Every structure is written in C-alpha cells, then in structure tokens.
Length: 152
Image 1 (cartoon, one colour):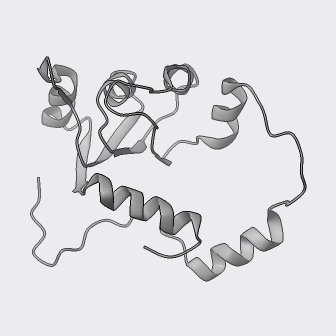
Image 2 (cartoon, helix red, strand yellow; image 1 turned 180 degrees about the vertical axis):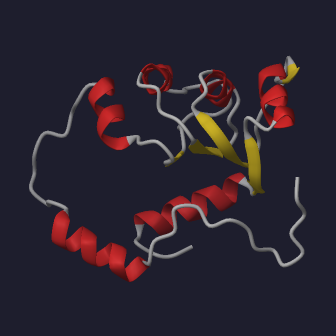
C-alpha cells in the first residue's frame, strides 16, 4: 500500500457539484410514479462497469444477497466498493470477479473466523487494490453530502 505524504489520493467518480445540480434539475423527473422493479432490472439500470458501489447492512447482517448475486450474474466488472464494514458482501463480489478496488473502513475480517482468505489473496495478488482508508463516520458524511448535493 502506498503512503501518501500530502494526504491526497485518487479521486473516484468526482463530478463538479454545480454541473451535477444543473443536470439533475434538467434531467431528473419529479413526478410521482411507481419506482418498484425487480433486482435484475435495478442492477441492469443502475450498476455499470467501473461504478463506485456501497451495500447496506453491517458485516454479514442485513446484506442484500439478491443484489450481490445479481451483480455477479450480470458480470459487472471493475467495481470500486465502499468497504464500510464489508465482510460477506465484499468476499462474494471479489470471488465473483466484480470488485477491483476498495476504499476500506473495515473489510475482510470475520469476527469469529478471522481474516478472509479470499480477500487476503485478492489484495496480495493485486486482483483487488485497496485505494484508501477511511472511517464509517467518513462514509456517512460523504453519503449525507451527496444526498444534499454538496461536494465532499
């Protein structure tokens, strides 16, 4: 892992906030409509190769396994994952060849079973690159800022 003296790293998915707000105002519908869809359709529409993704849940609890397996079925590749207490989900996605980079708050560790052999092999072999370390609080602030349309 590279130690950054300046405290700056790779920008992931950065967009100018003003341009983003303008695009949202011009292109996002505000009409009330039924947004329900199958997991298959949701993954197809909203998860693309190279995307930054974050899963809900905590460790191996309340993780959307249906979404994880659908991402693998659709062969999504080069995903960058928010490793915010990611344990089981990241193991499965790395094993499926979907995740190539991860920002880590807490990853690869199973409290009762220790460090994930699959995660360790992927990082040591270079299949999955750890590109940043952060905290769960840092993730929540980023998600809140994004929800509010603020740069973070």
